[in-house]
Image (tube, rainbow, N blue to C red; front, side, top):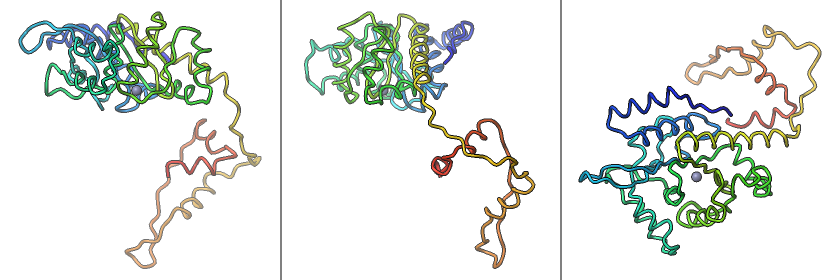
Length: 299
Ligand code: ZN
């Protein structure tokens, strides 16, 4: 997995948003959120979330410390600053690290302390973003991370792979309990680059948008490498005949097999026009001994 960060593009985003009155922090936040969102191996539509802690003027013009955190359901690939509603950080801090009070409703109520009442609801993981001290926090459900943590010994695999660079948070449903659990895990080793959430995903953080983003790329890349290393050959190629029938022989047979009786005209058939495509990936797929099983998927 390669970093998509380009200095000139980051600066262009900051300049473009500055012209709209958007601060540098939020502009940089939008830039790397989009970088994360455009890679389906990191983020599928609507999933994942990011945040930045910054200072903005409230409706009365007073400067307040806020957490701008991605709203629920927003698509990170095309997010705009309005997709990261500002929540007052002081209220969130009370809820997320409530001298560890266990009042469940407290966090949810505070999460609605939006600066702009019409803004979209912040992510359910808002509290987790809030308690982390870092300015920029990135969260994804990256494929490679899920592939590791969904294994029976996923926690042990991650502990071995990240060798102290990441802490592992046991599985808890997203919400107040997860935020509190993650806070405890983070407090125990505050020099980590991120958190692995068992059966859930990954958090990375940093003091700049670039740091948090580059850590996400580097740490997910490590997970990808680990998966490659452990890959066993489960794909068996079928025994293929020496000479494969030419397309001119096969195509009419396929066309006949795919034709359907026309329900409206007695005795007529509806026939398709076929488009022949091939390539290494397609040959790999159709040459598998197990094609009858996996070609069912998606039908
Ligand atoms: Zn999540």
